[in-house]
Length: 113
Length: 113
Figure: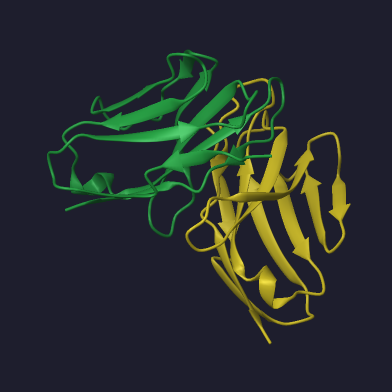
């Protein structure tokens, strides 16, 4: 089955700097890759997603890139703000297939003012 | 509009007790998922419904775990004879038909003493 690895497990950056979180997946059939942000005591909230027919997607300060050949995808957050502090999870699934999301282990991002 | 709701938000059970966790998906969402999130880990898939049909229960860890969605809307996850290793946050997610985006509820935090 699918396995998703996420790095780093913790990341601390200065406010205003950029943060990058990387994930790899094992199943070449996976074609949908969402990123979720989880704040303490809350459920995961979708922040951006990408499908395998697209190499990059951007939404304001957040961008995701996908390298299908290498089975890598990454989250980029620019101009970080204190409210970006949270745990971020990547995930992978197969559209119209099993549909279940397989999550990475999470990255605790801390933005230092 | 209203998001996915879950109840109770917190549950403390003595080892051996049965518990029932409820999920109210977003109206019109035919797909419903249950995930288990251990402390400091990413969510792990438990089971998936499309309307009232349970199409995938491969993630249920033992036969003590049972889920149902009899009318295709509200779902209940039941855990019988709870064990300490069942302590976790149980997340529910729902999605539209033929849409991959899953929206998560706030979760139920279960502590088994």
